Length: 375
Image (tube, rainbow, N blue to C red):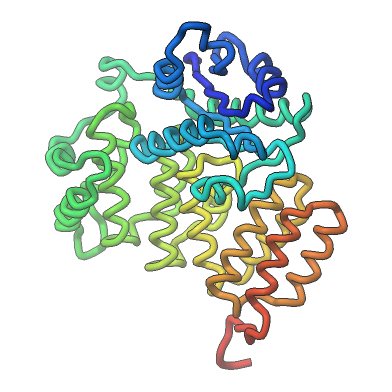
């Protein structure tokens, strides 16, 4: 395993907990970065902070009343968010360590399912578990050029097709997808598509790999029938979260144009609360889009409200709330009220309040049934 750098963003009021976390995280593979350990008397604080932030692999955000009022913490979290957008990967792991409401944390983190932990050794263990889970997913072996030559069969037609597709260049990806579409036969088979899929296994720093990923996503709009269960699972079970993110995004696209092609078991797997946000968010969006045509998906979210894990209950509650705000007619107000009371009885105030808000959204809305005509 490579050495991973974990930046711990916190208020000085929470120093004791932050230091306990740093000592528990520290091992030969993980280097925690904490200001009181890396910044010494006479150092330029901004330079040292910039060094720590620019080299981090993860930022653990200890959200509390004090950290939310800290200008330093605000700068650290915003820097990490901008870095996320530029690198298209989740870097911020938010944890709430006091009674702060999730709506009080930065808006761009409110849908990350911030885990609430107690500021004690048990809370430290929960954070350590989450951090190692994320880092294990990113521990992808590097390939040498000789490895690539032995493992991949390069296709000059594919490389010409994706040559101009760079990271985030969707216009070029759409053009490549249109060119790829011209190779589709009357039977629906596309002779280049299998070769294009091979390129997802190139090292992540290879431009051809990124060009292939974007083209694969774009092509789903033109030839959704080619995105079989086997293809989607090949993408969705990849060790690299960027490829899984593409699988989730394709599921989201298919949920709109070809919902019958979405493998719901894969979508649920990719939408788990402990997945990278760039994977979880589109997969969850796909499932929510399916709810009106597949009511059983809603049942799955309600079942998750009975999970033993608070963060999983909160995750499901947030999904139900989004459905309530967008398609209130497909939810039952009575069932929501029962769940809100049950969650309150077991002491899960946060999930209960989210479901209570959802209940308000569906008041006085006639429930819509799947079969509008017939028995």
